Image (cartoon, rainbow, N blue to C red; front, side, top):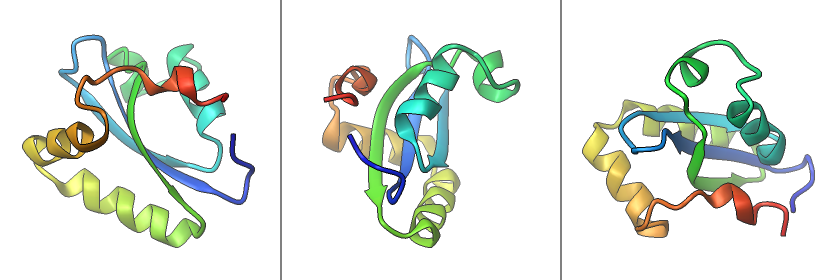
Length: 99
């Protein structure tokens, strides 16, 4: 998909889209795998966050981190609108990552 020169801001949720997690990574495939398999203790493990519903790609880690911080500050309604712009059905996008 992408090599390690790219950075991703992503949003994941649980099965019923009630809980959201916003993160940043340089390897989206690996990071989603870690979330889905509960390999990292904490919020995403506790709330069963395992569905990738949104992501953006950046070439500069500084912009990715800035964007992550921006989205994290938003109210839930605004995050929902962001997901709806690219994924109105809230389907799991992780199935498309390896293509």
